[in-house]
Length: 324
Image (cartoon, rainbow, N blue to C red):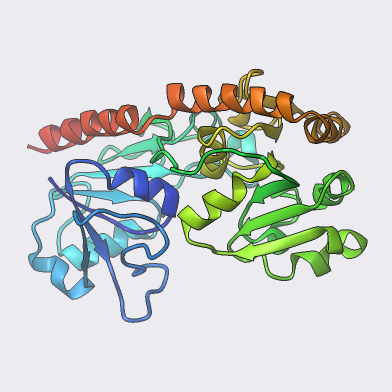
């Protein structure tokens, strides 16, 4: 089928567009947030086609995948059809709720014209979607080609905008781990992080928005992967690190509790326990490799691409058949 979706989350979209369909991705001259077009740092297949907003009124679109509330009106305007009524729609919720979390109403709550798909069971539990149909389709990843070596006595972190987001991304915790070994922080908006960390800054190196394959190769050389986010749905970079065979050190919050078994790394809410684990893995490379092997098996078993695409094909067919 022909599926319209926006390029919002690079890693998730990379997995999604490796399905059997044809994917239309809006592009605007400024390549802004609603017209980013094809990814430049992720491996996307030729089945992804850029389309200008003005072309969509005559485009053959079977289904729309929404990922932000404003996309519903935008798609209706660009297509000239009612999205959810004239064209079936699915809304993917990537994020944990904000605000009054136990009572946070989802922006697509109490609708009968679409399905909300959560990427984690944690999200499904915490969002209040009212009477709207929901489904959980857990993440799947395109397996990285890089493999863990851990030959560098350093730790890897992948995060976006750690200076602005601070406590959300666990930026305030980084100095404690930097005392054990230097940190390499990868992602978007990481420039300025060393200066923001004060005395710990010289122990932190940043690598801004590298191509995914290059980032994977570098991350895999670090002794362990740190996942310090306090409040996030489930970082795909964590799953990718596990799939490369990296041992992981993880704050025991949100979906990470279910995603990281004891065989894959160390998970705790007591930060000192994680700092101690970091020192242990630095001192014991064999233990790091043993946990990394467990991490890779866990990622393959739960977050494989084939399972992810099969789950999505089932839902896409249901939505299309229901609309007919």
